[in-house]
Length: 270
Image 1 (spheres, rainbow, N blue to C red):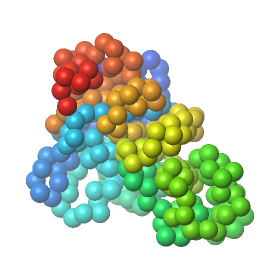
Image 2 (cartoon, one colour):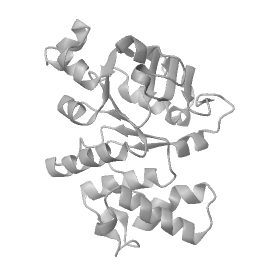
Image 3 (cartoon, rainbow, N blue to C red):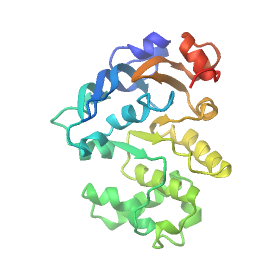
């Protein structure tokens, strides 16, 4: 399982599951010269939750942000290798691919909720307008659907034109998830999405992520190994910019192949 997930043929993966993205020999250098991701190759499986775990500074968030070209926002950062999105086999890192279009196809939810200083409605419709959608009926339908998919519609349907900043912390994070969903992304990236939330709000976000994999492919960075065990189908353990081990979550946490993985998931390291 481990080897086939790390090095499967493009478009295929272990056990007959479909691959949504094939990462091949990915390297990433920050402008400072730091080599943060090193020769990383793996498959991201469609309609599954894949968790990235590992100690702080091991490259998890750096790897995650390669998928939607977030590093392009800072000059001097360099990618090498490929992230190929299936089924159209688009290399997301190609110079010929518009990073804005990449971010429509690959949504992202950050550690701390970051609603725009606008209304709830305008937050959700923002990406649609950027994409050029002008039909008010279409926008309204997609805003409602995104809020429903984020389990927020019943709580905000009567105050869509109120400021998003007036929502609670958990509601703001679900709003950010709805905003990401509105443009019909193929993958959503979650970078420690519950680290700033209380246990009740955290449980709500975890339940939502488990539901969303029916619609989208999910990659999540988490420092909470219990969370990874609860919500992910596959887990990759990273250390010093490399994937040490990648496989089904149950296998990673119960019978890891590598001693380094065993030491991390049992708390003896990291």
